[in-house]
Image 1: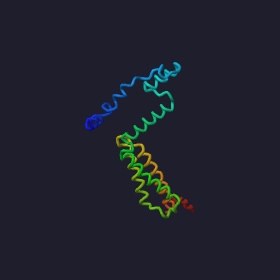
Image 2: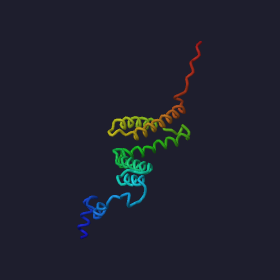
Image 3: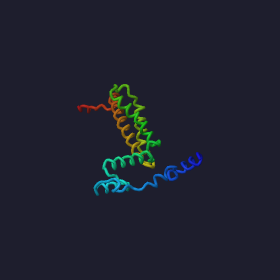
Image 4: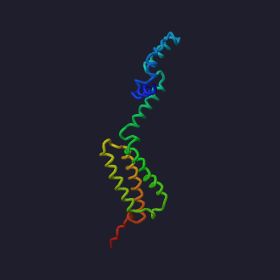
Amino acid sequence: MAASIISRSCDGPAHSPLNHLLISLPPPTPHKLGGSPARSSAVGRLHEGLHPHPRTARFSAMATAFKAFLNSPVGPKTTHFWGPVSNWGFILAGMADMNKPPELISGHMTAVMCVYSGLFMRFAWVVRPRNYFLMATHASNESVQLYQLSRYARAQGYLEKKEPEAQQ
């Protein structure tokens, strides 16, 4: 007995042990519920699967969109999502370093981070499916690192304005 219930429940929702009870229920009729013709049409819409209230329809649409995001090729079940999330650490670290003196900035490392983000922006554009989240992450990192590189260059004297020599 238990084995037959388990085997029937494993076959899927169409073979559920309680499914015959759901199928045998008749649809609600207006005379059983009582009420006006407007109410009976609302009951009919509800039974047909239509949503009688706009909030319910909106919630259903949001749930469907969220489920589509979860199962998408760049959703949170893939590295196409978690790679960019982890790269936000570079951006946050760069933003935290904006308050530090420019003498502490490593010019070589900042230049490497600029090249890295530039290369991966190209990768994010070329990879299929195109990963806009990765692209935005590396564009943000490129902006932060270029700002840090400009602070470093100013502190080292690379961006000083040269005065024209006085002609005699």
